[in-house]
Length: 349
Image (cartoon, rainbow, N blue to C red):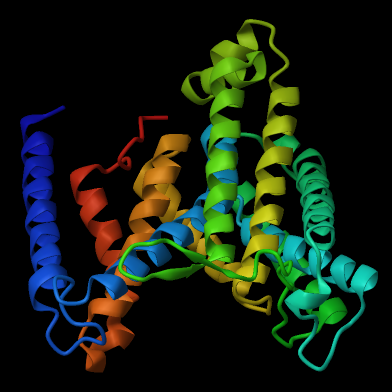
């Protein structure tokens, strides 16, 4: 590292610490003109905002972990990842309504849905989206490995085609996947009288389970070791006689399936509609850029930073300026890249 680069990173780190300290002081002690007021006077809303950021980070992580798996191993900027998210959500929505019924004018309610009617559509949708991603990789991407721009353009074209087909088949009206009745409740946290929604805690639990599963797979299995070696030196792995194409196929299937699973949870958490795919593609890109290419830990930390930043910015900006909260996402991105140009846990490709 050159002295000039080291000096730039030190300056960036100092600016990041200064801005972080100012933000913490504002939230804890000042927060003038905001909806909640300073945290020392309103700990209940502070805790709810923190939990909202934490659970949102869980959903960001599920979607972005699949993106970083494909991006880190294969150097494929899969611009169809957001379309896979939306496709997984729509498949689960149609399966759930096929098994349970169409419901009223606003769809199904939680009272009509049991755990089986949510889990089975989620699993089937994830597997179908995984095979869609695998087909895309084998048919359109395998023959042009290493040509990043061409692959990015191909995946953009596929994303546009999928978006048009989903609009034609599923319509343009926002729709929700119904949570099971057992989850659509509130959990007494016994802290400051907070009653927190169980669905958000479920999302966080799924994210933790996905993170643990991916860690075990990447750290404790032979396929995982090959993937980690492929991230560091793809040419050497191929030279050792390892079937790197099979590894690529497995990684693409799992990465795409995670996008589909994220779409099911996202469609239950918020709604499914045209344009949602591009929002979640942007979220995944931001998480991976912050965390660093190919790093599972980086994806977790990036998702956490993004979730907390977006929720605290919207809650603790003065009421007349809450529409500026989206800017803080890009402020976070700029600060991280100023300190660590390759991301917090990124390494040279």
